[in-house]
Length: 310
Image 1 (tube, rainbow, N blue to C red):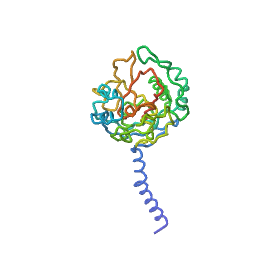
Image 2 (cartoon, one colour; image 1 turned 45 degrees about the vertical axis):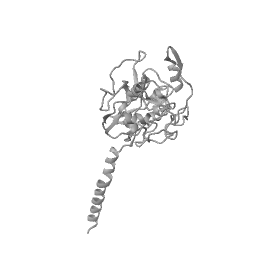
Image 3 (tube, rainbow, N blue to C red; image 1 turned 135 degrees about the horizontal axis):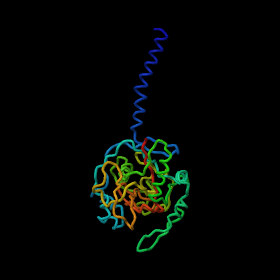
Image 4 (cartoon, rainbow, N blue to C red; image 1 turned 120 degrees about the vertical axis):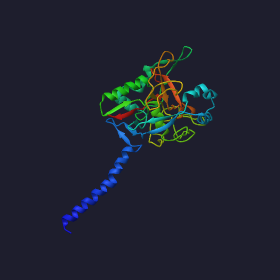
């Protein structure tokens, strides 16, 4: 066999090996949940797999949830009704979601303001029969801590600034079905890590009523199965959705509910997910739905973004 023939066979053999072994690895990586994608600002996103899941709670779920709380008001049917009916939702491919909540340094890069300025901007809010409560002060300051004192309108201003960058992605707040899908990460338990919350799992009030009373760095705790941090605790997170008292007639295709509803205190209310540093186990569950005025940002409220490639 001549030298040229040997070289041709060598090239053919390794070319075939490249096609058989290397190319499928890259193809699999594109479909692999947990793949990290960075944008031009270095923000890290996780690629979510497409699929279907059961969103919300049924009677068995709420029985487990109620065993976590000492507050009997939590388990009144009118408070649990907003998690029902449990229903199947389809999530399409191509959705990226931030690995962790928008940090204070990321907020400054995009918006140019600090958490102190955000707090002062909020002022006082009505809480009960004309009484007003002032926002708290220092709950944690640092580049790697989540941004808080962010209203829904502020979060959308951040989204608008990000989309103005025209960096190849379309940014938005997650729909609440996208958020719950990401929180569950293919699990069916109350939390992504089981049916109880401990201080080792997330920054919220634990079983023994112990909690940290502050925000912590966004990668302090272990991620869920899809590589997402702080889906339960640290700060509650805004979604794109208008709040309704149940899932009846709401979208089942992963899109947000943007229908108008009756206002609370004359203001539109939006869905909050995930609970914050001062949330009970009951209120930090993947299925739990909170809400607040879209105009106000509280001391335990932040957000994370979703993105889609253009």
